Image (cartoon, rainbow, N blue to C red; front, side, top):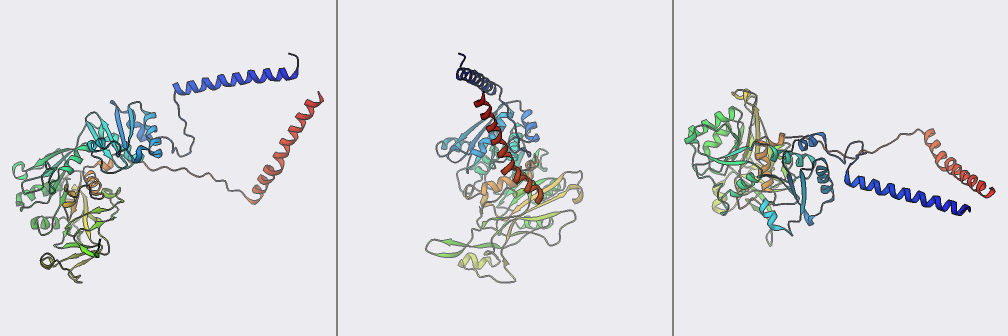
Length: 456
């Protein structure tokens, strides 16, 4: 027992036992009282203050179903773990839509990644996986108010209850319901006014002419700060075209042609332009993918705009396209030749967004008028709803009209590199200290300890 080796062995065993006990206790406390520390200077590993406030206000459980490829997404999992850490009311489930297609179909998921955020009977779909989008999705389903979207009817418009035929817009209406909106029909000759609870009013491809009294109702609604979306078709709605001209929007009586690559035919001209260029506007800020249109007409801002009105293009075709003016030749003989001076060269604008303060356009109050106009309606029908990213574009524009893009703005955060700028003298001092001085000091300390033990 008096030997030095026994003494050192006992000390080592005691210290090891104490270390293991402390290690086990720390792990036990860490598992029972979970605590995270974000040591990054920009806080990239934790949620922002805005997100924490939203989570702190939760009164009911929120379920997040993340539909991702193969059911795994490391970056998204880390983000959602932060939500679960800050609120016990948040639960997360990652789903592979290939393995569980019934869940994806029930949620209305058409692309991955997509998050379905649900609280009670309210739900919304989020197609972006950044913190801002997820927090706004939670904020949307926790809001007691469900915004109402009205579809004008009575002129042969596509049916919002029709989800089967290719001409219907039932899939569009169902997607709005999945986004936590209320959807209703509006017959202007009967109501004579736009209801006060309207977040936005949509007029989609009327087949018959609208009465002047109906356009007057829309005009009053717009001047009071209303939000309206027009989806038009070629050679139809002359009264709407004249109405929009007063609002700084020019709808040309042309049809857009675009080059297409077809099997065994090579490059041909087609009536189905593909759009990949979007304007710098809030309504299309999230759009980076292509969208598909069919038989579209040009829509562009007027050269001279009414006072107080801002109109800008939000979607344009490729440079290889043009807008054909000779529609008789086009539809009768399926031939078209670009005629400079009559036809519009590409890129051709086929959608615009307009906005103004109500007080600047003859209305009252501080509410802001907003309007979207597309030279096509087929992209929102059941036939083309899931073509490319048509659904994302349509829902993005409606969300802008309904004011949903203003919920919350959370800036992206990134790891910031830490750098030290050293002068030549400082750099030389660091070199000598790290290469010559410190290693030799450690070596001398080791020699001194060895010498003392062997001498005793």
